[in-house]
Image 1 (cartoon, rainbow, N blue to C red):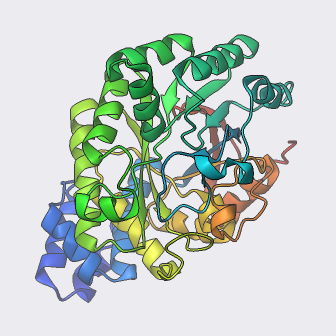
Image 2 (tube, rainbow, N blue to C red):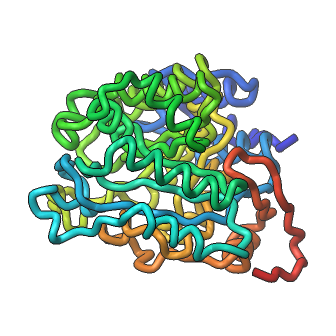
Length: 382
């Protein structure tokens, strides 16, 4: 059991904040109003101490990662989200890329003999890459490497392909699961509140649709992740609303693996005039998410988005997972101005990054089954 930071009761004068600390000490859920208070009045030290207590109570010093790589079928997209630096409209598809099924299977084959456990497949919403196209892709990957976990398609991609194929969400999800799809990433959530969503991503699936697709997946035994894009034009109230909807669905299905706050990056998009959040605000975001989302087992910092050293700092603010090795196989955040312009970490580097934060590296699979716990002295061979 972690030691509760009792000094907070002596150093914090706000009675409402002290009541939140008491709830955390007693393992009780905090309310939306209390979460909002943390955003408005909780200092970095206060929320960080509470989040670290929760994190260490759950996992001690363990910090999870996996060996994974990404495939991005296309950056051509029918949607035009104002925050996106990645996609190219279908009308300007000569500026983007479009991979064939065989090209993507060749990427998978390039990892033959390597101990990767997961392929992560997301991309733009391309009108010619329909349900049948992705069924073929999933089947071929699954046939070639049955033990490789296939995590693929945001709810935005799924909503479009199901509507285009004229199948229900239930039928579409079942078809993909039967083809070999095993879990969903958390992308496309952005901000659920309609006042913000209609300004930054108004033409794609709404909050209710995103949540419905994940609920259907959970009922079919397909776990998923959840995200929130923060640090742009949203207010604290919108963050709380977003996380409440996720917490409510998790109470219903228990199908989310992890929550991933995603920092807005302002390079090369239509929101370049919006300043990015500071590192202090990033750390507060992770800590408050850990405190509020009591029913989420894991909080992940996606290191290619934050930068490896900033992600390392989140391990003291409620985060217990750093994603994976990536192997320079994603361009979504590099095109938006992330510090990580060539996002790849060897297993040795990732283990060392975790060790430097005085945490214990644990290699996991996609569903957080532990594959290997690394001792602090062990020499690693990639």
